Amino acid sequence: QVQVVESGGGLVQPGGSLRLSCAASRSIASINTMAWYRQAPGKERELVAHITSGGSTNYADSVKGRFTISRDNAKNTVNLQMNTLKPEDTAVYYCSAVYNNGRYWGQGTQVTVRS
Figure 1 (cartoon, one colour):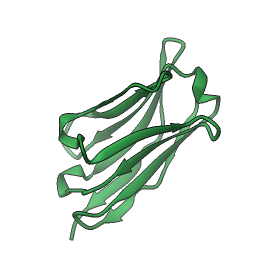
Figure 2: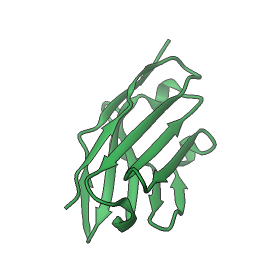
Figure 3: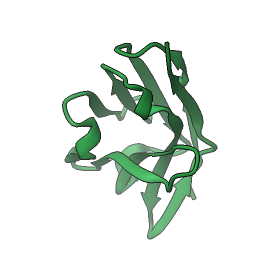
C-alpha cells in the first residue's frame, strides 16, 4: 500500500502561482505512476498531469504550458507547479499513486483562483 498526502493549496488571484506537493509513504522510485487530478464542483474528476517512474510526463490540454509536474526521489514527493492560474483552475486537487496494480488517493487540497 501507499499513503499520499497533499499540501500547498490555497487562495490565489488570477495570474498567480501555487505549488502543490504530494508526499508518499514509500519510495516514489518504486511507484509506477504518480499523478494529480482535480475535481471542480458539479464536475467529474479529471487528470491534470502524471509522471512515470521513468520521468515521462503527460498533461491535460487545459494546463499545458502553465503547469509542471516533477518528482523529488530524495524526498519521496511529487510536486505540481501551477503558474498563470485561471478561475477555471479552481478545484480540489488530488494526488494519486499507481502501485502494484492498485491506485491510492490522497484527501485532496483546495485551490481557489479568484480576484
